[in-house]
Amino acid sequence: MPSQTLATKLAPPDAEQQKAQATEPWLFPVFFLSGSAALVYQVVWQRALYAIYGVDILSVTIVVTAFMLGLGLGSLAGGALSRRYPRAAVTLFAVAELGIGLYGALSLRLFALIAGVTHGIGHVAAGGVAFLLVVPPVMLMGATLPLLVGHATSRSHNVGRSLGNLYFANTLGAAFGAFLAARYLLGGLGLRATTEVAAALNVLLGVLVIALRRRRRGEP
Image 1 (tube, rainbow, N blue to C red):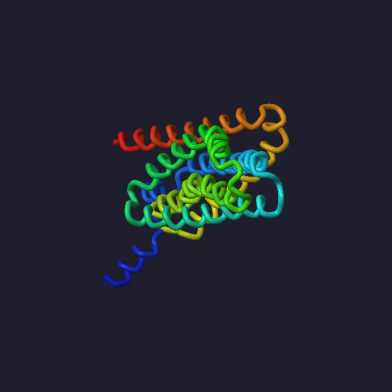
Image 2 (image 1 turned 90 degrees about the vertical axis):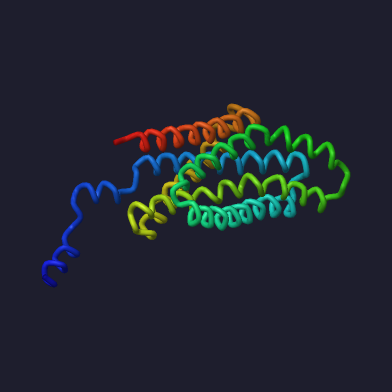
């Protein structure tokens, strides 16, 4: 009996188990495009805020710091949510994408409105306002990675592989988005239309992921 038990434990998983544990292939193109949209926003928002508040070392530091802080805080929040609601991780990812898209579509109008209200308040105070404008949507961006890693890990039971593969896809997408924005989109479309393209992409991803989840739940 002990030898049979050991053999059972060492036996490779059958086809159904392998299918259940495999990372869903749609995660990678979705997260690639999510990373692309995120870096398009970073490039666009930097240019928009520089146009409003000026370009100097303080302005650059504020925008970059806001992105780094937002990503870090969002990662903490996304990790907590994925642990507390593991079955809803993909749905929460879709909601985050929809939230990013909504903010992105309104962002330049919001920046212009806030700039009019805060005109003349001083350089440091204006930088603080710009910081607060960028952090909330970037927190949603930061939450997407731990949410998808939590979902992928629940299937593959391999944290390192899930994190590495998804982070690779997202980073590659981010590099592509930065190149696309700087090389083609901004010159051809301008700030507003480029932002609308990124926002439409986020909304499309959110709707697509929700549709995929509903379809999977409806499968026998």
